Image 1 (cartoon, rainbow, N blue to C red):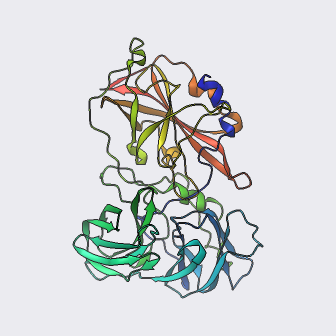
Image 2 (image 1 turned 60 degrees about the vertical axis):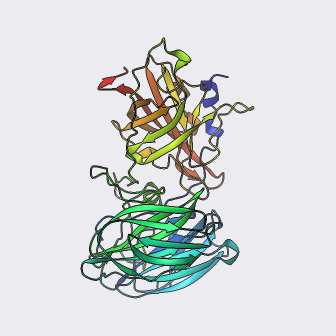
Image 3 (image 1 turned 90 degrees about the horizontal axis):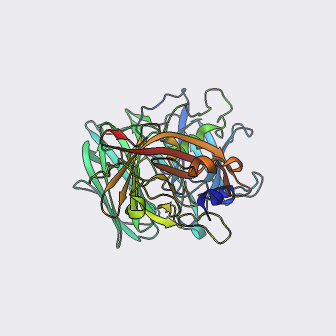
Length: 464
């Protein structure tokens, strides 16, 4: 079956159709709030607890509430300004009725000028909501760091920031006190019994950070949350990515905002305390920050020619520096019922073997998940690609095929542009596909697809 025919049925395929968000490392100036205001941050840090809807209610005004839908493991919201008073935080199963009994709930008393993190922690059977009071002031010339150990696979984790020991043999669902460290660049290492993670951070004097150790497939991950700068909490989400949340290592890298939290804030945050000025919104045009991924090194492939045919080597890796993607490529085919296969894990992209090989004449079609029930996917930030961004495919002979992105579009699955995706072209092209648009809680699927289009370039020459 030709891929065009199969792609026409892609609207029925759950290509990453469970909404989840990634942890964020804040890196933008704090916003001010009115006198008598405190701040709340909400988190889901229980690895084996399914996605939840998180509700925040004000005792002062029972009609005021904030709802964050379908929050998966690893999600942390930015700080949300809340009038001083008592609040209830409740978690319900994702998609459950707002009037149903919560899975768990707790109360938190917000004092003026203070900041708090309320996190769902522990295993699913022992889930609890933990309220942590967050510091806002660091010693002069220093930064403060604490650690939340949210890895369930590693029973004991030791964390070092440079030569400083932040926490030794931390058990699952534990939190350290804040520790002062000198500002500057340093490597943070989280070491478990069988897995580890390393994250390079650049810490500014006067900033305060929470490092969250998370489970990733086959490894640990360290997410860097910047709690405060200049004695003010970070109230808008900046850096990272879910995938990783390390700050960009390239001084010229784009700095923007995480996709998940833009969705999270775009229309679901209701004013707290019943007053004006408490509605939290994402700003138009904001885009996410990601861990820096360099372009691969190697011999650049020549422009495609019709004579090359299937002598073109198979693709093995995909790199997209602009959105922090570095993934191996698996082969994908067509299922028995005529629908395209999708990668078996959210962390890996796949190349449809019935499409052109990257660097051969025709469109090479690569698909990846946007997320899963537990983690962000390899194409979580695909919709933030821009015309002119580059994608690189490494082939089995170590040559690099360079593609320039020309456009990124979102299409309803009912109007999937199979012809445009798999149309014949006289040059080497690339199509990157994931899910996107509105998430349908009733079906558990996204309603649209995000598609990035590009063409091969090499050594200053274009393939077209």
